[in-house]
Length: 105
Image 1 (cartoon, rainbow, N blue to C red):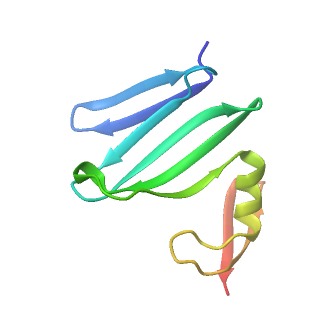
Image 2 (cartoon, helix red, strand yellow):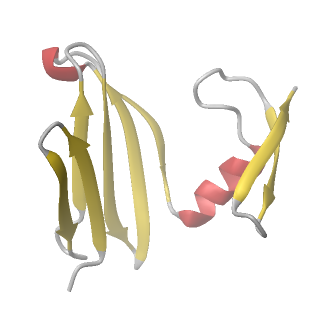
C-alpha cells in the first residue's frame, strides 16, 4: 500500500507516483543550472522530508536546506530563519485557515 505520493505537471500533463515505507519517494525538478530535489522516507516510523537545491541538469554542488520530520518542520515554521534569505522571521501558524504569516526581524 502506498504511503507516499508525488505529482508533477508539465507540457504532457500530470504524472503521479507512489512510494512505500520501504522505497520512499524522490523527485528532482530542474532547469539547466538550478533545480530542487525532494525526498520523503520512513525514519523511525515517521515521515522524514529532505529538500535540496541542486546544480540542475549540468550538475554541480547540492545544498540540503531542510531535513526533518513534521515536528522539525513545525518548529522551523515558528522559530527558524527564512531558508532563502537567512533573515529571522517571527512566524505564527493560523491553524483555523491552515495558513502562516509573520514579520521579518
